[in-house]
Length: 247
Image (cartoon, rainbow, N blue to C red; front, side):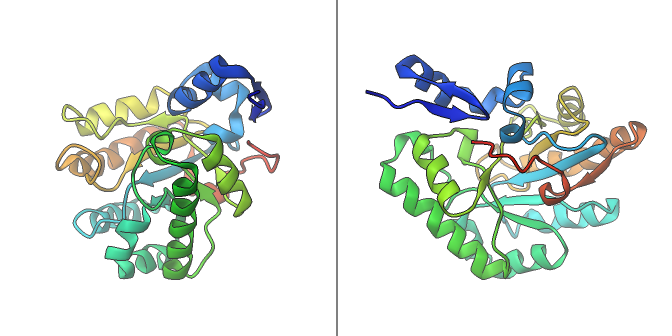
């Protein structure tokens, strides 16, 4: 018998439920259903605030330019890092943390957790957590699985080691070949922005080549919209996500 799984207070039962549970999270945050039913999971925080997050780095070829742009805007962000990338650029991890940004776990390798054995998933999260704790000097609070795809194993392991799983409510779809700074801005602002969590990427390691340049160009455009709406930007630690269990 398949045991029920609770996600954001929603009980998922049976094979059909598990299929929806696994396939749905990547889109949950940008849908009205996910935003209402699983607010903690998708990163819904306090009104007036926007959590800015970047996935897939760190990358010496692109992350420093993103950091410079954030400094110009006076923004702090949360960087969901891969352990494999962090070990290749250990000094950059420390630089990001020293600049006041938040370090979070994106896994050790950028692999779909549903296509991996349970023990491999558990080991992957632990390895990434250990690496990022060591290199940043602080214990990460957050976990976001690659592709935003969840599994029961990943959720349980993240919870076991004290990580809270969070996805996003708005994304720039900046990984696409056809993305532009304007399209990224448009995709971000048409979703749940006020009290929401933005997903962008500080590297093209898992995206179309040089896509990070469009992300970089989109930041001042997103800033204009955020200023117009009277919102503030910061990392997830300042976002006021409910302390209730999100999974």
